[in-house]
Image (cartoon, rainbow, N blue to C red; front, side, top):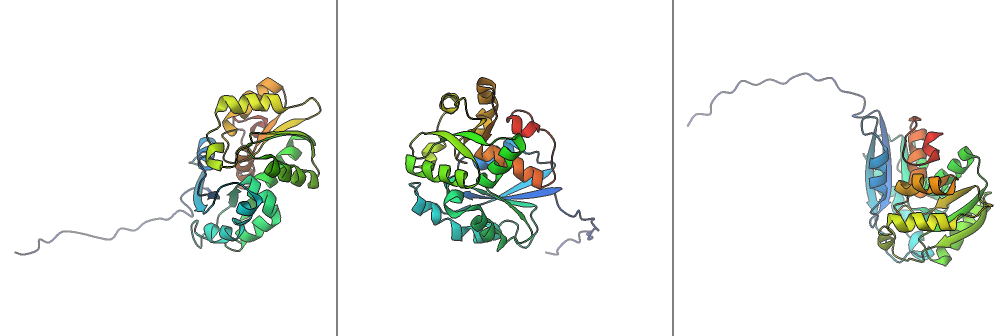
Length: 253
């Protein structure tokens, strides 16, 4: 049987520099339920692409398990669009950044993405507090008291005055992701004290970004959450500075 002759030709094509104007890489924990969703809710895919790699993580959340994530960051960051430039690379774990330190996290990421700006939940929170003119904060975390105290110490060493803290006392970040919106809002209202200028809700696993606006309305003060701050800082560093409603005062600056 003869093969039929089919007309064909190779067509020319014009190539855009990138498929989207801006590109953000996110390194998330393997157990993370929340960070990607918060990025997708807040970011406009027409102006920024968010590309994710995950690293192994072993519960419970202790300083020892958090410290193990550090050496895994370089390989994970390198797997996000290999050999291509990212405007920003964000690390999605607050407690691990506290244990490792912001500079150590940035060093790990820059080994694979030397030209990219680096964002962590704590560095983003510090920038957020500065933008909001805040020095004194109340803190709410899902962690155990031990891990919460590590965060408080880290905040204090970076010039913040933590006037009080509350925690949910959980060790597994998968359970942290299941804390209900009602529980987050009630705890946020309960955690704020008069001396504090703002409330910080820690942990990228906690679904607090979606609660920030309602808590602000109830307490009359700014609310900064880990994911909210990371997305805000990543967008700003990527050159996207438009106001975004629904996620707290931070996005209206």
